[in-house]
Image 1 (cartoon, rainbow, N blue to C red):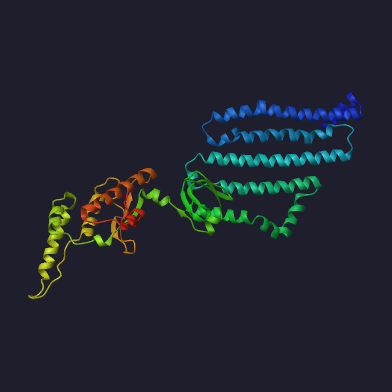
Image 2 (tube, one colour):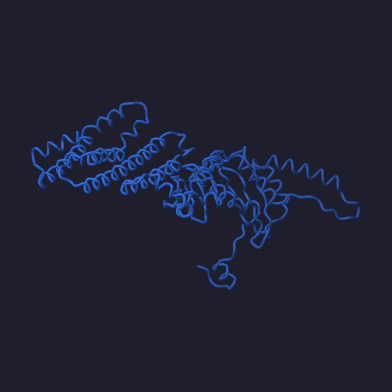
Length: 414
């Protein structure tokens, strides 16, 4: 058929340079017509058909990048096949045209496959399973192999050699390739480990201080993991670093449904003392402490009776302290709050005393893990704790300020 078309050109235009140029223009025009025919007629039909089906995977063909690239493939094939119809071209130019057009077909075909894989990933991400098992990294590895093979084919076509001639030469350059693609290989292995061990998912909150990453994972690719920090900046972490170095994943907190409150108030140790009889009587009538005080009074009375010192000796009777009573009050208070998880770790404890006083630590879990609600609950708890300290005769520890020093010096404080 190509010979017939060539004969037609020769019959109409002769064999001169004019005939050759006109024939080239006709082939190029046919390539443009093929491009516009595919864009204007073929692709809209495919797009409408894909949108009217319930099957999601055919939406790949409605992807605009995929459609744009595949519309370039047909004109490239027309240019490759149309060279034989041009009369008057020498063998050198025919061969050169074929090689360049063939290389173009290979490049565009590789781009079509690459956009097809990207569209597949886009469709896959609409399924819930994509949160747990992302495939973007694997598809990028496939893309790399496609582009590598396409590069070999382009060189083979331009050099008019068998692709296997160049592929066999790659073996000798394995060490160089391993060095060039070191990060890719490490990232691919890391992607497999992350997916197999379920170490990371899109949407996880992670912390990786070395990279200043503290926020939600928004993308897991072959080479990089993107984290949107709480200040809305984006941190990019090499994928293999998540295997070679440690990071904290807060997913367990989300799945458990409880967010830890672990904070202490430092108590001035000079304010720690025994309760007076009047205070014992007052706290006994205090509803949050009534049961505790009654049980403690009975326990202490029985202990002191059993350990009464011999006549003439001074005993060491047990007595209630203000800080111990405060701890009991905080237990009762926190158990009454609906925002505290009662089925998780619940401790009100004293830490080791130090130069900054005696730390009284609250170690409980909020049952609402949302950040604003969690911070509001935590603030309410410590607002209340600080306000209650004077009721128990306790003072918080605070390092002296300029006002304190001026007061010591007798200066008037405004």
